[in-house]
Amino acid sequence: MIINTTFVVGSDISEKWQKWLKTVFATSASEAGMDGLLVMKVLDAQSEAENSNTYAVQLRGCDNDAVHWQESVLPALLRKMYAIWGEKAVSFTTIMQEVEL
Image (cartoon, rainbow, N blue to C red):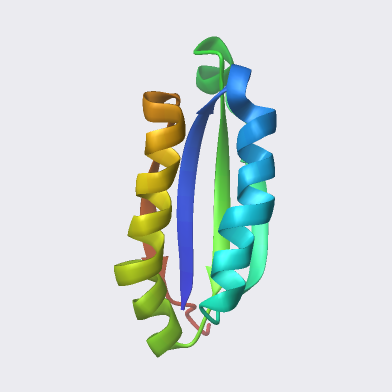
């Protein structure tokens, strides 16, 4: 399974948020058995016009690890993020499964 969390982050906090992602988020993901951290900056005019940056953050994990991450670990991390930055950093999560063609 792949769990993608998309973050919209205010440009004024982007550097601090990236540091949080690298230290707190990535460490928690690793400890929860998730791997393959991939961080992509979404390039779109709307984010730039709104003075924000959008990031797609993907993690891979087996079904059990992914369910644990999505139900237990991720919500706690997001609550911490919202406590620090409020609405300057918002997110939504999508669970994906690879399809063999």
